[in-house]
Length: 352
Image (cartoon, one colour):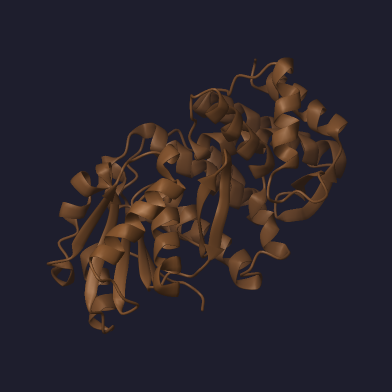
């Protein structure tokens, strides 16, 4: 089953239509401490009156087995069945862990994703991947389970701090690079000074999510072409894991922005990706995302983390590369020397 997606700023009406079309015995809403306070009261869905709210702590560190177990416990204590509906209201942490809780309890409850962050709207809430972090590694345990529906809106973006908008925008940049040069350079013209709760930006979000779903529909179980969506993520996940080791977690979206720079250099070095586009990307990332600070002393740890990435095969580093925007080459084995060279160039481009 492919996810049904609605792009609208009339969120309550969309939820009501989905619930009216179903035969659900009970509604559960999963939100974190921020979205429970700032977003859930705004839903104004008549169908959600009497829904049970399950609130989890905010933050990536809480995408854990412990939090998942607490959600299962609340389902169990409330007598949840497969005829109940779960509505995940939040960013990527909520849609990932809420989706996994629904996908696994009673071997599967239907759920809706209502992403409230830009990152979740264009990435985490789409494509049917659910999961938690485990043993210090990102998304180490999870399922492929499609939501019943995903409702994407820019209505809630005004509740977000600027760095959250930038985090989601990094995934939009990735999608643009996988699509074509025109879309990529159009996104590079953004100065983050305009309003993001507009029909114009909702159309950009719709375009970005459609690019992702093209890959998902071709390869729903991530066995081949969908691997292209991991562009930038081999280095990004290593940066995130290193940040967790430092006890200073970083945003996934910011990590993706930095990972794009490193893997775009590899694309240039190995596949001839145009240097002018590499420099344009690096300039945009440095200006808007700063830099993740690393030294030569971190290289061995980062390489080790990359070899344990879920995309890795036989302990080798696996990346997606581009020969140009719109032409991804997935499952590329990268030597340790090339990975270290990419870290060197990343540091140069980021003025570290």
